[in-house]
Image 1: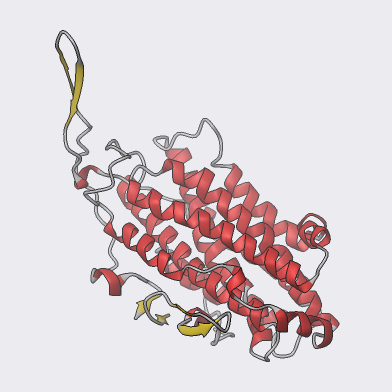
Image 2: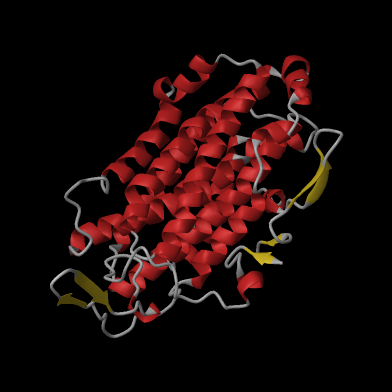
Length: 376
């Protein structure tokens, strides 16, 4: 059984603990030997204890020995959830959209996809450009390379849904630029990524390091851990009534990826904080959560300005707060929204995807990621 707080515990058999840093990092020592014909460079072997998530001095090209075996387990587990959007039929969704959805439900469906299409590109840029190149342990970079691919796959999935339904792609894709409630969330994420994409950023500088940690925990804990995780729920609410089931199934596969993205990011942030003795400003953390909640609230009131059967803006916002408390706990922070209720008790079940499916009436393919998730 996979557990939200440590999705890979059942694979590694190891507790979900953060590896403490050693007292002193031994730099790589080079010895240059000369003779009349060649110059040979001999180097000391890489020791696992010398590795660091960031600011390390060991050879970034040497995978083993592992300092962070859990990162390699994330990579192996991610490959168990391999799929493409073409594997899932969208024919029923086309019929539902044309003949069964109300105007209010179409509004929800279109705007959720409009937000997601841009968000996953932002997530891809964050990991690929702002985070991965700063890692100095290759086992982390390898999982993040897979994550970049998965964000691209998710973007393809949303485009496939939009195209299958026959929506105007130019209009849907441009909504994030013209709808303030969607644009606000995108701009907040842009602000976080731009702050650490500076060419002069130096993670050995205290202020730059704190800025990087704040940005990374925003993307892991809020952007993927709350906004994505909670953002699929309007589509799942339609699915629970037998509507747009193809789209919802696509999002179930995406959600399993996002579970790992969030968990990996949070664990990496906690490791960076431990190894570098980072002290974050409690007010900056509180402001981050409050700003994210305000943006999510405006977004929810826009996409659910008229409630749909079984789902409303108040449910969406309260569920965001409940999930935010969960993420804050994983980040070893105080709950930003004490007393928030679990309004959507069925939401965690959406990641419990274990099924055999005959996609094409000719081939049976099994999709699972090692068992059902246990969300504790």
